[in-house]
Amino acid sequence: MSKLRPLPTTGALTGILEALAFSRDPNFAKKRFDRLGNVFETSMLGQEMVFIQGNKAIADLLSQSEAIEVWWPESVRQLLGSYSLANRNGTAHKARRRVVAQLFSSSALQRYSTGIINLIDELGKELKTAKAPLPLAEKMRRFAFSVIATTVLGLEGHARDKLFSDFEIWTKALFSIPIPLPGSSFTKALKARKRLLEQLQKILKQPIHNKGGLDLLAGGLDEAGIPFADEDLGEQLLLLLFAGYETTASALSCLMRELLLNPQIETWLREEIDTLDWPPDPQDATIAYDPSNAPRLNAIVKEVMRFTPPVGGFFRRTKQSLILDDIIVPKNRVVQVALIASNRHGIGDLEIFRPERHLENDSSLKLIPFGGGERVCLGKSLAELEIRLMVVGLFRQLQLKVIPDQDFNLRQIPSPSPRDGLLVKVKV
Image (cartoon, rainbow, N blue to C red; front, side):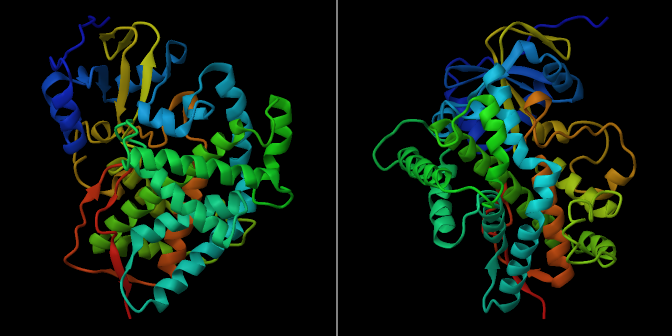
């Protein structure tokens, strides 16, 4: 039996300097893991936080669900709302999760497929006819939002655009200083949140027959005792918009960035894509490009999720003392699973983007880009479907070229995305 060890610490007291370093340095966690090991404690503005990396520490955490609960920074808690699934624990969380999960069943994904294919074809036409370079990352954001707003909620035109405008304001302040100063991003986000909930309430009060996937919720809502048009459901849909939009847009933007900046990888993938049909039969769209039919595409998606996961980490709070990788973590500690550092921790060329690794049966790589345990992201299957359809749909229809002299570095908050928007034009 391994000998238990005390929790290593950075020695930070107020955590002011640590918070500044965390917000500015993408290698914040890695530098401290290199010095202190796979589990360490620091302070962030007075909040004691434990960072963990590695398969053992993460598995230890997720295997003790009864001893941990969800935790988010105060800005996230306020902007998501107290009813939100993200802020709930226990039976209230499980009941609502079962209801919302109906939006992502196999039959629901099949229902959404035609709408997703149409949105991809529309983007392809826009890129082909554009007179000037277009920011592909922005187009990926619009696409991901349209899938949720149009395909799931049934919104079109002006109503969808109005929701998107407020949603961008709200999203950008999720990880901000939660002080409502006049004119601050957090204050603007609180006002945008109010408008978003008002718009969602209007949607919920309208007939839901054949309106996106909302009718899938009705029976489960009755069973759980949740009124269909109350604030509770509005906050679940707000979370749904964020979870199904921001992370998918980030994954798509980072995937396109890697392919367009690495022509040899793009050529390798196109060899496979050229053998696939577009568009797929809507009845088969959910499986047309799955790992068995498109192994190289699957490897690319996995490598993007490993190299630049759309969520850099997730949080839990300990309700009792835990043992993580033979380290004693006391009660009432916030634990952050550092996915970026963990995905590059180990033996081999993990600091290099190399999708072929996922075709080599490397069992040591355990990826959880959508979180883990009983709180794994509900939109995982929809996100993966969108990504696969988008890559095949665009690359079967056109070839893209990146515009030089732009900043290809990634901004990290609220999720990774090219700083200058990944400007592209279609090759003639």
